[in-house]
Image (cartoon, rainbow, N blue to C red; front, side, top):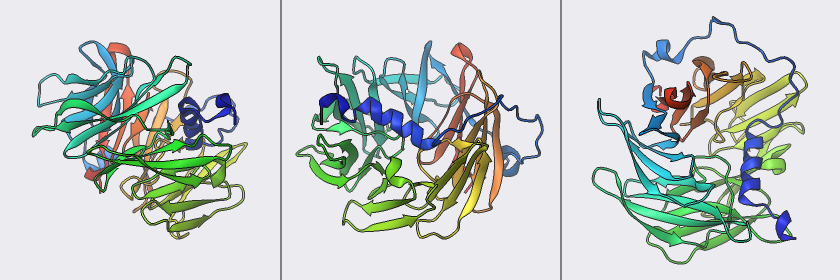
Length: 362
């Protein structure tokens, strides 16, 4: 296959975004959510308030990648640098530059364990092709990162889905996915010891997305009409049944089934074995996260209520109670990691990030 037709990093990112709300139906005039729609709120139900983080630090805007705990986060700035952001008590948050790739897209995935931080840096080479490197840094007793060191440049053509598991620590290794340079579509599961060494590569035919280790889930058009889950440690798998018009996207414990029509979409969640199926949204809502059923209980959703500004209505479907809760009626950008949901309000120097730790609801 010619080089310019291979799945590049940029192409993988665009495809992954399409999977989240596949396919977007045609809309008429933008809908406006009613001021009071009777939906119970997360905040009243659990007697909580979101954690607040500034959208700019020392005059520089940043975007969260993950929240490590109540006082530390990983994020990126507009230059693609990786930031370690700390917020202690009433003091103003500070940001430490962990990695500065020097070109965009920059840091495209990051992961943390108790002992290490790791990240993938991507930049164009002289021919304009995106190349990547995997880096790691030890964490000190306070959790802050030490000196960075290159773990490997043998990353392959990295595949990203916007998932919390695009890069992950497991079994004393780091794991990620790449696209093989071959005529046949093959997704490579790559892993390397946290101490370095040779990268192990195992190919899987088709398009795949990482779930919580050791699982992979089929992705893209391969998941129309059903999905497959496979374990990378022993090769065993699970077939997930779905209707011929349903796109099935799975995590290790839940699958998201999407049916789209001219008047909107229906989103159902179901266990991989076909049990506990429930409709979580209908209309023009879409999933906030590429990962399904966060902490095995919640599905964050968003729906546009306008064309500009803070025009996203954010809700949370509780799979344990089969109930929808309002998170924010007017949000800007949204995001999630394995246990947190966040959204922005305001813009420029007035931007704020609001963070909900889902484990506080469990």
